[in-house]
Image (tube, rainbow, N blue to C red; front, side, top):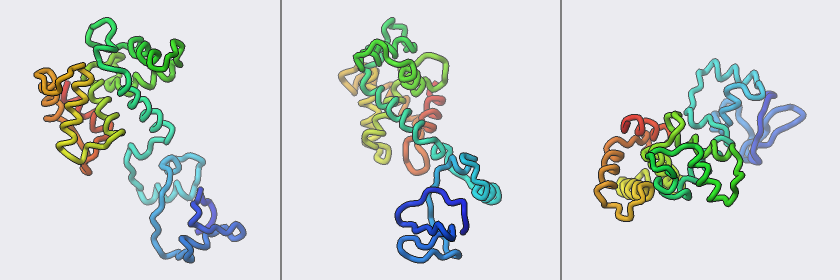
Length: 220
């Protein structure tokens, strides 16, 4: 190995004079040994233009998960935007004109009320609105709010690996969004059945935003 090294951790001893790695985890680096490493996907698609790395990626056809390639800043913005939906109240609370759909202005009013700031930044509102507007049509339906809230509850307390917990999370989320005190009411039960029969999880049993988008598409 020679030159073009990226950031390394404290367990890697790098020799600036020879521009080589001397030790890994206290042991001499073996050029023939395979090492498991972690790297930001952005480097694999051209950030900082590390030519040897890009050539290696091209030659080896390196695959990666699309969601793993999101920059940390984007992930954090989506995370906090999703979590905010858990604090905005029920769909009925947000739907000021009672037409069954949430507009950007209605979401802005609720976000402004939550923060106690009528001059809340448009960027904050745009991010909160966009995370729930799955189809990008400029309005949010009760179903979209339910799916967004379900994603958010999973972020707070993962429930996807347990069928019983997942069902309870769906019931509680639907009840909260629909402003129903009884999670066993007919209205809640119908929506829960609709979601449960179509819900998507990945092969590892984990709920992901992309899987929820597929769920939403099948529920339309």
